[in-house]
Amino acid sequence: MGKWRFYTSKELKPAGWLRDQLTIQANGLSGHLHEVWPDVRDSAWIGGDRDAWERVPYWLDGFIPLAYLLDDEAMKATAKRYVDAILAGQQEDGWICPCKKEERPKYDTWAVQLISKALTVYWQCSGDERAIAAARRVMKNYFDLLSGGEVKLFCWGEHRWFEAFICLNELWRLKPELWIKELAKLLAAQGTDYEKMSPLWKRPLNKWTYDTHIVNLAMMLKEEAVTCELLDLPYTDRAGRLYGILKEYNGTPVELFTGDECLSGLSPIQGTELCAVVEQMYSLELLYAYTGDKKWAERLETVAFNALPATLSDDMWTHQYDQMSNQIACIRFPGKPIFRTNGPESHLFGLEPGYGCCTSNFSQGWPKFALSAFMHSESAVLSAVPVPSVLTTKDFTLRLDSEYPFKNTLKYTVDAEKPFRLEVRVPSFAENLKVNGAAHKTCDLCFDIPAGSGQVIEISFESSPRFIDRPNGLRSVKCGSLLFSLPIPFIQKKLEYVRDGVERKYPYCDWELIPAGKWNYAFCGEPGKPEERAVNKTPFSSAWPPVTLDIPMRPIKWDYEDGYDTVCAKLPGTEPAGEAETKTLYPYGCAKLRMTEMPLINSK
Image (cartoon, rainbow, N blue to C red; front, side, top):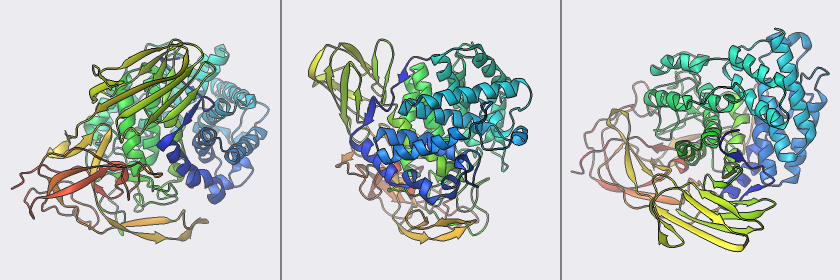
């Protein structure tokens, strides 16, 4: 289905900095959540008395591909233990969620959709036929219950109905059966039509609604792409239309939309929930695979290389619930938080600084991104996102050595038993493109690879720093796929405590980040050329960013937002408060405290 298909974790493996990033994740909270967090450790999904709904399926959806991408035997065994317990709990009629039969009508079947995804991912990674067979029984039971009126979609299931199609598409590909299309139609009939909801996105409200919930909207972007074939409908780029509305009224410089927790407008001091970051990445991955439209791949890069690392600690033991473009402190709000519908700790780095959904769901971000590096069709192999990877099939081995997005040099080494066609997506911002040292027009590249060993293709290009316009006359600096921010030095304050039976203890405690430097600056000149450094074992290190930019800046009078002393005002003044000086900008993902949207004023 669609233009391109994904490889599995058996064929595609991370290399270089991407493998280092996944290793950090495995050594951090993702790889140990089942040991330290009661909602996963003691979940009802495996016979315990804790969460019986979304948290274990969310976690498995990322933990499973992480384990198999790294070939970590202990992690694979943990994944199997959880899947074994879940399969053992499947009822005779196919129902699999941990609730009593009489509770099903009131059980939000979003969990049915989500566990079907996790089982599909497990089958794709492990090859365990039990998982896909169980998923088929889950979906057939879902059809029986929905068609018989015993359950119906409501709340989250109603707003995320299209998530079931991740499993349904795979089931249809393996063995098309009429009930699959009938279930697809039932889900669409009972599910939310987001196009009708779009007028609500133009003015943020200080209230919580499903129709403006940022995670629902991040998931929604892929709806048409994943459903149109089973629904026998043409693809019309609905995602492009709805993305345009969301960006116009709620966009951020890292291609996200504000949502703390519902849509929050264009202010750089409103937040974006971490679940929305990883779900938007997944939507963009699927949109690019289905359409081949490179706009989705470039948006994916911007989210992945900026928003994802920005909201995770360097060691990935802690995360934020909400990130902000202009984030000058991460300190508990003593009174009303700046966020429209989130709590006073949502921007802290911690175990569970908001709802536990992000604690379990953030794990999918990097692994699914890694699985998007190469894709394939019947006639070609596509280098979709040029991150370091090794692709091994029965016909060839293809290795990409690269430090992209920090450096714009790509080296493909091929050993092929049979000839094949290699396509390379070149970013639209690429300048001075060269292939094996020879100048080439800036466009996508195609290579007919003959059989043979040791073939090398070297590609290089340049990218120029540039200002991008932001609302209210502000600017941000971008170079290639990387956004750059003024980093604010900070002091960390460790918070260890127990709440509701959940312990926060180092390394999975909470942290406040207290600013220890100035933040009230404006741009007053053009950015210089990127200064490249070595990429170390922590690719998005807040202490050693792999690339920086120098730029003239000038202190200005910029107050705090009214009623707060840890949040800068939404809009600055332009009156200078000092002389021009050269400041060093970090990649947004490396700057945990940062100023990103600032005015551009004269240097004198």
